[in-house]
Each structure stands twice: as C-alpha cells, then as structure tokens.
Image (spheres, rainbow, N blue to C red):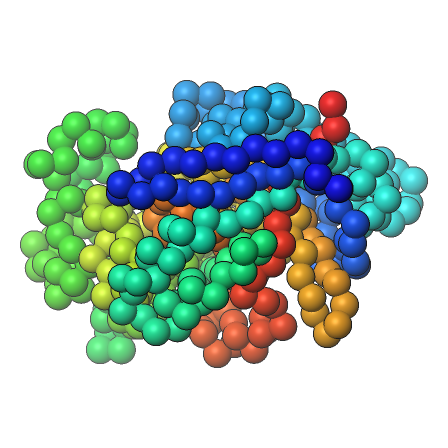
Amino acid sequence: MFFRVFISCLFFSSSCLAYEFIVEDVNDFGQITDFQASELCLVAQDTTRYINTQPQDAFAVHAGKVFEPSVTLTRVQKTLAFICETYREDMRHHRESRLNDPQFLAKHFDFLRWLPDKERADAIAKTSTNDIKRRLLENIPNEQIFLTKYYTKLLSGSAVQTEKFSQALYALPDDERHMTAQEADKNKDKLTRFRYTRQQVISGVLLKNKLAKPLIWLTEEALHDVLLQGTGVLNIGGEIRYFNVHRNNGIAYNYSIGKNEQSRYWYFAQVPSIMGYGQKIEDKIAIKPQVTFAGNVAELGLGKLIMVNYQRNDQTISRLGILADQGGAFDGNLFQLDMLVDSYRGWSDFHQANKQLPDYAKAWIMLIKE
C-alpha cells in the first residue's frame, strides 16, 4: 500500500537522473536472515560515532539529498541507536533477535522503497567496453536495484620485492606524509600523488625515484584486485595485517572499462581492521561482512539502514545492512548497492561462495517510526 510518494530528478552531464523513493508497506519479508544482529550493531555503533564526531563532513554526514523532509539526520541516528538497543535487550533476555522478526520490523520501521535510476544505468551501459557489465546494467529491472558484492582481498605477498611479488602497495608519497588531505589538495600541482597514473606506478616510477614507501609486495594481478576492492588482508608470520585505501591520484573511476585498465591509483595505509567510509584514515568506520553496504553516500547520506529482498531457491529472503562505505563507482549512481560479503583470495572462491546471491534485489531505506 503506497501512502506517500517523493520523486526526485537531478541533472548530471546534461541528462536527468530519474529515480523514486516511495514509502510503502512491505507485504512479504519472507525469511529475514543471513546477517548477525551483533555485527549489525557494531557497524551501527561505529557509524554513529563517525556521524557524531565528524559533523563537518558535508559529503557524507547529512540526511540525504534525495528524500522528503521527514527523513532527517536525527531520525537516522535514532534508527542506528534502536538497532543496538534491540540487540542488547534481546541478549539480556536470552532470546532470538527481533531484528529477524517481520512483525517487529513492520511495527517499528517505515520503509522507503528505492526504485533505481535506470536512465543513468542505460547511459553508462552504452559506453561500456565490458560485455558482461553492459548486459547487467541494461537488464536492471524497473523495481529492483543492481546488487553487486565486494570483498576484502586475502593477499599472498612478501615483505621484500621478488620476481613473483613485483608490485608494491605504497604508502602515501614522502612529500605529503605529514599533510592533511586539505593541505595536499591545495598543493596538488606539486605533489607526487597527483602526478602518476596506475600504469606509470606499475612501471616502477615510484620505486626508481624512491618517492614512496612500499608497505608490502604483491603480484600485479593481486594489486589490481586490491585497488578495486579497497582492502587487503595479509598473514605474515602469523600476524594478520590489514591494508586500506588512503588517498588516490585524483583520477576518476571509469565505470565503462575493466579494473586493469583503470588509471585511478590508490595509496594505502595499514589499519587495525576492515575499514569503510571516512575522510581521514584514522577516523574511518570499522565495518563487518554481511551487514555493510557501499553506495552513493554523497546523495543518500551515511548510516542508512537498508533492507534488500530477493528470491533464493523459491524462497523469499530479506537481509539488513548499513550504508557505511562508498567508492568512485557510485558517483552519480543511484541504481546500485555493493554488499561486503567476506574475504577471499580471488574471483573463483568469491564466486563459489556467493553464486547463490542475485544480481538484482528489491531495496528499502528503513527509518524508525516517528
């Protein structure tokens, strides 16, 4: 039952982005599964911490630019708090999480159905040189979003350069190690980071001129993978080390070409766990698999609780996650969400573990009832 409609249309590259967010009753939750309430609470907590401590981050900390006025940042914060309140209360009473109960969700949340921006997806498809990507974009249903999956890369590597492990994950170049991102942006015409494409870095320009410190050494294919996924996980001598993207070379992600052809290059930093969105490496949100979505934070606003719904083996499945990550692929993109699934060594084990997940799903933004 539809009881309120909000239609938004923005202008991007001289074309109109048509999409809808419609408040509706959800009639078929199916089985609410495939996530842990404890992990959802952890992501909710750290996303709330970021929202509360980084109010100056106008890119991400806002109610969303595509919703009606009833969607406020305060309401988003109350929604995140309610997740943890519910989880903790259920734990105290030694009962199953009510976040997996359709009646509980229907009672306490409003649901804004997300209908995708197919015009933008179709426009990108027409320019894509990747046949699979073009087909997936062209086939987005009118009432479902494109649901992609991302993972943290389980790395094999070396502390020193070898013939096999010939490519480095580089820390920020030496000439900006002590600069804030704002200071670096003011001096970009003088800095190493903005000077080289991915292909030039792979050719060895940084190493030859000793411009940046190698953090770890990888194969070239693994380097392309971790540049796409954003996080690498490496076991060295029994110690698990996490590496996360820090700052890039200022070249935009090109949605129409493959990962190995991208000119965008990321410099990395070692971090304590898997990290999501954050303007500064030390402020990034700690995220968890199965309960984290990456998406268009600039338009949707950080911290949205999202439910996706799809069919699996003739059964309806719903699952919850939080918008706590983003990436260059989401610039101007209101047709897609990317779900963090787990850590894998590469495409084959990632595909084997996730082949049951669909390419498209119904999606709702969930907000605590007022």
